[in-house]
Length: 90
Length: 90
Image (cartoon, rainbow over all chains, first blue to last red; front, side):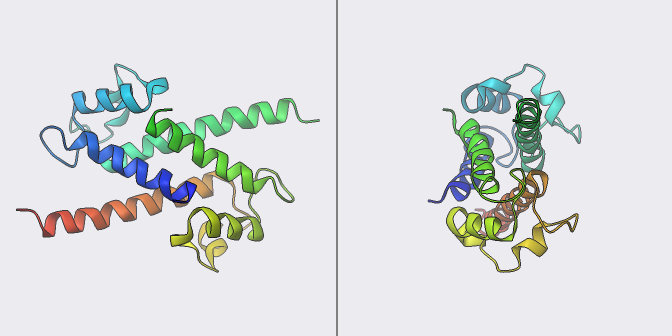
């Protein structure tokens, strides 16, 4: 599968793999979120991840909140890249 | 590498692989965008992709416009999944 397509399907697949473990199959509760981050995004693992991701305050993370978090991380890495790119530009 | 981490780095890597081919290294021009979609996201290849992605109308696609497009596609697939999930829910 093409790179971007596999990235998109991997993000979808991971969300559903962990959200289906307990309770609401379409949302990540605290335990599911913690396990997902620990296993799939260790560099961003934080104890207060729920507080950071749960924008509507319902105590769980839905897909939109998850993908927004992924967008924020990707943008942060891009900005760090840009910072270095500008600094070391010949 | 963990699944989500590799998805994030793949999205970054693909953007830069194609944006660096011509002109501004940090933006996709029409040809670069077309080649990227054709190779990496064939299911979403469209001739008018530039018009769809180029939100600030500068004739190119920067990283934020690209990642917003990826978010839209991922959300669209999620919504199709939800639609079927609700329809066939036992």
